[in-house]
Image (cartoon, rainbow, N blue to C red; front, side):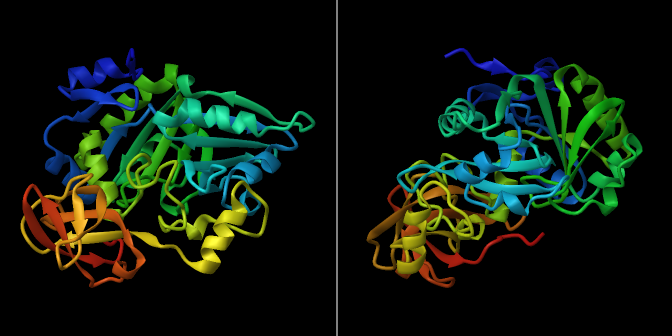
Length: 364
């Protein structure tokens, strides 16, 4: 398979990024070190080039009707300038993908999907479009760049570049505005780090100018480019699910703790399956855990009970740069899901002591 390149690939090379394959793209994984980049975002401000993400425009008088049918959250609660986290259920009670839904107007929405699922999601949504509905789908994924500027100093660093009042933007809202000379940029108070900040969507031809302007405006605040390595440790400290690891085609959103974005006020794909799971309870749950012994839990390591019997496996795990201990998530039988429950993680032939904890690992 030929890997795609980000429009600013040459800039990441100039910055000395370590570039590796991810989700069908050549992606910058780190520029300096994962720990340094992680701390930069937690304490100051960093910029991620996440232009590999997918964007679809859904428009027409029946746009919301289609979104309601294919997604689990209630898109009728959206208003212009509001963003919603949701997921696309499949017909077996699993998850096609998780996504963000942006309401641009009552008849126009933007869906932001995971890079590895662009084609799958595009086909899935089109498959559920009805011929008698007034709805048009446009895949703009290859035309857009997305920069995530994250950290407590993000608003101060970016404010000179836009008239939008960044400090007063509520979490999960956005504005279509001029940004660093780019007309019609989308500036969104969202992110995947738990450190605060913004995500900026611009057309490919505007990307280099916008990137340069952000780096210049952020220089007094110590801005640095940040790779996917730190993005993973940052999102895991918040307990945010990663598609392909913590949620998949075969995991139930009810097991994964996504009941809060599953709204039975409307009909949608697999609603009956989820309703039954909600009423009867699920047999396993996605839990967060931290290690009490020294060691790093990795994906697919066995989770064992106090007696050393295998009860599940790690879906995401790392050494937390903030807590300086091993943390992770994984599915276990429901009886082991209570915070404080003792578990073990099998690292090679050793059983490392751990315990189930409440999310997030690190408070916002």
